Image (cartoon, rainbow, N blue to C red):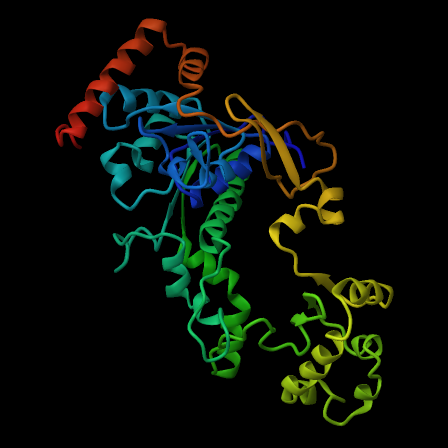
Length: 404
């Protein structure tokens, strides 16, 4: 699951923080793009998440590999100047600030376009660049609640349960990648950049299209269904003698596997409609049978009978799963101060592209001098002046002065 070089000639300026934006720019980096992450003097605040390795939190380490870290205080004139110089030689600028922040930092699309007409600017917001929620703060859980996603999580009749996948963040990040790749393709034909807007609320609702379509067709909004699929009988988590397994659509083979072939012709289960009507009774028969033997036994039998099934792994079990090991899903990177750092590799594999090693998440400001000197041609003296101005600006801001 190494790094693919298909985007080697693309340079991305990453102004984003937390998860939504960085997850998208990390994927662009996994595909070979040069990603320059611009951080304030305090760093991306996700560096402070816990648990940590050294000074970097797990959130930061999860979504910031294959990037260079450059410290620029965009509130300072010198910092904004260096940022604009980078825009001149880059292809994409991505941010996830609230609406209005970019204008104050002179990073809005109209400003960037005047500097580089080919620039592709992409902004991720919680709810969109306009509308009643445009200025509201948004972290993953808020769009998940507004979208209705949390209403589908939990036991029937119980309180909603939080989804632990950061689905709205990641959906927005991945739609951003889709949009920027489409914009790069269009630019090949037109020579022009463009402005892309993605918001977390729209992104997660796109992921929920089947749930909304069920409501549009039936007039009944789906409800929480616990560990079982709300509409497909026999799909979901079932208890065995020593744990749990998850079943996919498997009728009528599942009846044979558990030794209850009589269910196939039973009038309660003989049609799709009847199986849905008697869903609980059918699933109770299956679970009662599964509790007579261990998960490992059932998985062995089910695989022989071509029944879609798998274990319910904990995370420590998942990384040892034979398919996960075979796929090389877990990647190991050598960090300059933390030693070996593990992460989840890019799921995209592409013929004709030899996978290379991933670069570990950068330390704060690790590449500042390198990028300013080698990419922009800044002299040692100019870098020193920029750093001094930023330090002075940061001190004044910490006293409540000098804000834009």
